[in-house]
Image (cartoon, rainbow, N blue to C red; front, side, top):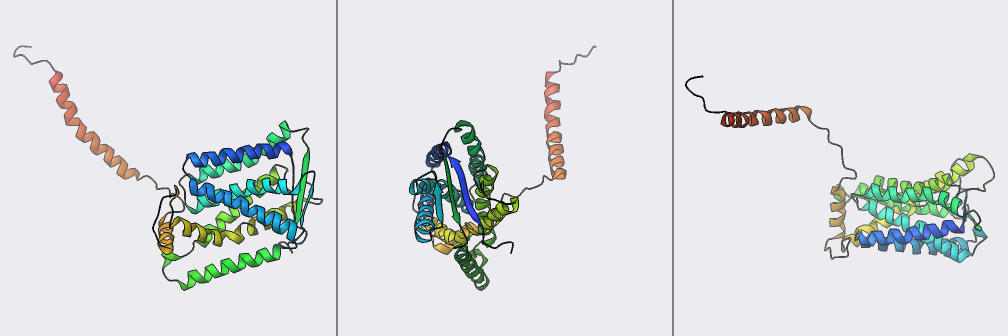
Length: 301
């Protein structure tokens, strides 16, 4: 089966310079968010990193034994990996949930770094030790699929039962955001040679990991994270000031914000008419100015 989780291996190979460079970027991104007074976004990003570490180290490594590593310390490498992709993913998600007016600029900054970092590490870290870390996903992808179905099915039923559309969960936007975030870094890892570098087989094997992870891994928490986002921002603004709104009041407010700025074509007819009117209004003034500048007319020329 095309979307079977059997044989899907999520692995990465990178050198130590890659970790050092990425850590510097994370600190710079955190500082930039604070300077821009994106306090809630920064806090949510740090929370995402901590959550990823609990899941990756606590569940994938300790509970299921599906994590394996060569060339590095498991706890230290997973701490960096969790803060790296957990922080950036949750920052990206938070900015898109809020319909931030600079969401595409923030997205471009993060994705651009994911694209450039592997090449920088390869150039400046040629003699740096290499870490190879991987996990088998067949043991738990079924549980992930169950969580994904349960939350989205419940949200779909909620939207059907509740007649007030202002209170509906924007499921299309949530799904799109989840796929975009997961696909963004999965694809850049693959292009940069970090992801699936040692998978033996055709490119379709690597593509399988890209597709399954992009559809599943971030989206399983999309509904939950959006509910958390609405609940928090109903009581706090981005710069941590009180925001005394109800949960559904905040939901309705968000649903009123356009997902994208719609392009409004210029009405050429109206523009031409306005220009003509402005020109007509300016003509008497111009004539008056010319007349005033003319020398007095004498009776004899």
